[in-house]
Amino acid sequence: MVRENEVRLNELAVALPERFDAEVIFIGRIRTPWTSRLDAPRQGRPDGPICRIEVFEPWVPALEGIKRYGRLEVLYWLHMSRRDLVLQSPANDGAVRGTFALRSPVRPNPIGTSVVELIAVNAGSLDVKGLDCLDGTPLLDLKPDRTLFVPIAPPQKGDFETG
Image 1 (cartoon, rainbow, N blue to C red):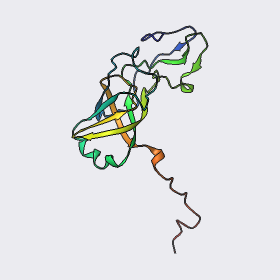
Image 2 (image 1 turned 90 degrees about the vertical axis):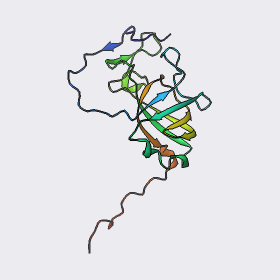
Image 3 (image 1 turned 120 degrees about the horizontal axis):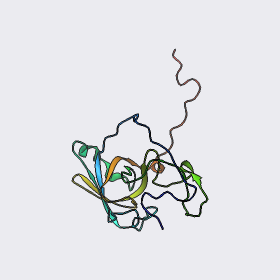
């Protein structure tokens, strides 16, 4: 069973730096039925509950045209996650893997991502299915699902030559 802020057998926590390198702007808040990691699903599911993504002003106009996409990538800040584990034991059996080899929410920069199904666009909010984060999670960004786009062809010889 997952326990909050637990360090399991053979896991390794490190000291966090005194200073951070960058800042982010929370552009909204995510509303889900889950208030504890103990209750939240390990991954979002397309048949999961409808959740709401609330977008703050002045970012609401950035939702213009989003209806045309059925799937979105949601990036969010896992504000309740530890940031200091570099080795983790996901099965709690003493066997460890590096944090970068896991999809665990415990990471140096706790950025979560989900691909969600867009259900409805409201004034300043979106209804979606497929999230796995806690209620009140800060929103970092929204993007159309990258699989909906055709890759841009790489430049060809002569594309940048001038006469």
